[in-house]
Image (cartoon, rainbow, N blue to C red; front, side, top):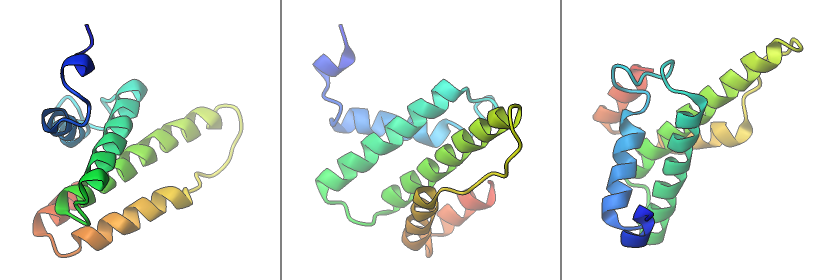
Length: 126
């Protein structure tokens, strides 16, 4: 039986669990960016989108949590893009191009988190 039959994906317990996965993947020993598989990065990306969707439904506005999730989504998409670029480099040489969509995520996150000291520590660790 799927867990989603018992607990809806928008339930606060599921949203909190997804937020914890987002926070841990790429940030703790043995789950650093280099340790994560492409599948785990895709899970993190999906969880970021799920949490952002839930926050939008709740009308949370530009909260710290939203800013942090936007930043994690930016970093995740950047890592996936870097990996794809390095795979493509084996076939043909081209420079890594930044995605406008991804840069927009970074700008939104920076605006939301600009006065948050704790968020500055997260960004500095990258």
